[in-house]
Length: 135
Image 1 (cartoon, rainbow, N blue to C red):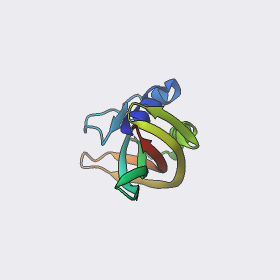
Image 2: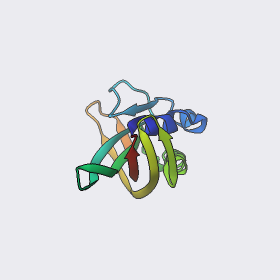
Image 3: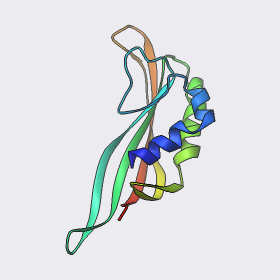
């Protein structure tokens, strides 16, 4: 379902304007300009029934905004836009059907000093995504 998540995030002009460094699955390189967003699946549990038939998959996705700043006001519009795009979202792709996506948590980190000596803020939102794989 990463294709669906990627499509939702990268197709939004507002989010693109707020994150000139880009949107990445899994992480970004050290030289990536900020702010940027990366996302990844934290966990997935399948509901299986008799005959090993998968009914749906219950996934937890982390979507993290990163900015080289100590000012939390920089992060707020990015976090709000991600929430607007993904909370209560649904859809479909060639991979299957997204039954629901709901934000479960917000995690704030930073400022943290990186190896390069610069300070960064991180805002991670956890989204519970229920999906059925295409038949």
